[in-house]
Image 1 (cartoon, rainbow, N blue to C red):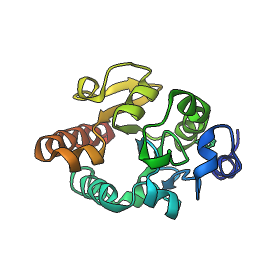
Image 2 (image 1 turned 135 degrees about the vertical axis):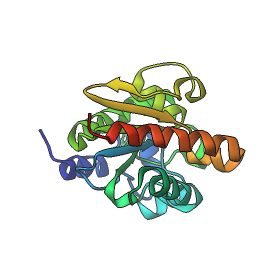
Image 3 (image 1 turned 60 degrees about the vertical axis):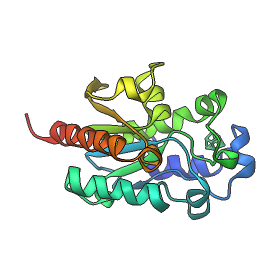
Length: 185
Ligand code: SF4
C-alpha cells in the first residue's frame, strides 16, 4: 500500500478530469495523518485553491470553532480532506464524472488515515461515502457503522454561514455525536 505522502504526490500529478485545467494547487488534505477524526468536505474554493489547503476563510474558521468547542481538539489533531481535490470553476458543484474520477483518492485516504470517526460535511461527501442518494438533511442525525469505523454526516459549514442558527445548532449536535463515537466502549 502507498503512503499518504505518495498518494498526495500522485494527486498533484493527476489530470484525470477537467478540473485539472483550472487549478492553481491540488488540495489533497491536511492535518494529522493518524488522527482519530477525519472530516470530509466537497471541494476547494478560490482561497483553498490559492493556498493549497482545505477549509480556509470563513468556512474554515467556523469548522475550527466547532472542532474546538464540540470535539475538544485543535484542527491539527484531525485530518481534513475533500471529495474532489481540484477547484470546480466558479465554485460550482462537482459533476458526477469528476467525483467518480477523484473518488479513489478519497477512498485510499480514508483507509490510510484509518480514523475512528469520519465526519462528512454536506451533501457530496455524505452521499459519496455512504453510497446513498438522500440529501444530508435526511442522512444526518445519527452515526452510521461504516467500514469498521463510524460515519457522522452533517451540514457543510458554508450552509451554516448562509442559513444561520438552526443549521449551526444541527452541526453542533452532530459534532457531539462524533465526539461520543470517539469515547471508549
Ligand atoms: Fe485528478 Fe481529482 Fe483533480 Fe480531477 S479533481 S484532476 S481526478 S485530483
